[in-house]
Length: 281
Image 1 (cartoon, rainbow, N blue to C red):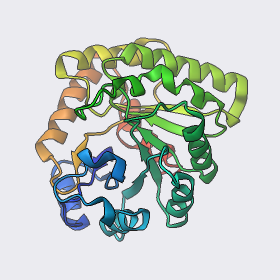
Image 2: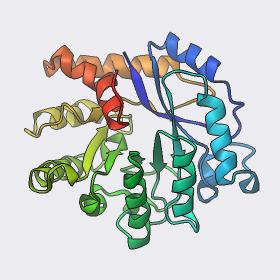
Image 3: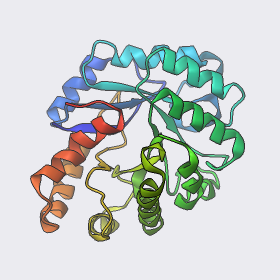
C-alpha cells in the first residue's frame, strides 16, 4: 500500500474524488491526505479564482468533503490559520464535521507564540494530528524565519500531540534531525503524554540534497523507522502521476543503498501515516 500524506486542493479545481483516485491508481498510490483550500490569510496558495468571502470555515470544509466523501482512503485535513480570530472555534467545527487532521503553514507567525499554542493544544485534545510546513517557504514573502525547526521545540509541552514537519525542513535538515532526537528523549522522560514528532519526506529537498538528507535521517542513530512519511506535494485536481513515480523511484534507490528492510519501506509508504492519523490497515 502507498499513501501520500501531502496533497493540496486548489480553489480553481472542481471536486472530483473519483478522477483523483484514478490518477493516483495510475501512479501506484492507494490514497492519502487531502489538504483543504487555504484560509484567507494564505490566498497566494489558493489558486486562481480565490475569493476570501466565499471561503468561510464551513465553505472550505464543504469543498474538502466534496473531494473525500465516498472515496476510501482519501483523508480530509483542514488547513487552519491558528493566528486568526476564531481559530479555536474552527478547530471545534472541523473536528465535529469529521476531519482526519489539520494543516498549518506558519507564514506570518511563529509556532511557539502563546496564542497559536492554545490552538495546537485544542487540536491535540481532539486526537487529530497536525501536518506543518517546515523549512524554506516559497510564498514570495520573507517567511523562512517562521519555519525553522527549533521554533517548534515548544510543542514538546503539548500532551499527546502528534505532528509532522514537512519537506525534512530543508535547508535546515540537520536542525530537524536534532529536534527529532530531542523529542524522542522527551518521550522517555514524559511518557505517553508527550508530543510525538513525525518527519514528512515530501520533496522540498532538491535532488542534489535528497540522498544526503535521507541518509542522515536513517543513520543518525535515532529510532526513526516508525515516524517517517511519504508525500508528493501534488495537487488533487491534477495529481502528478509522473512526479509521484519519479519520487518513489529515486527514494527507493536511496533506500536500497541504505539497505533498509522491506518492513521499513512499508512503514514509510503507508503504515506510519495510518498511525499518524490514529488508524491502522
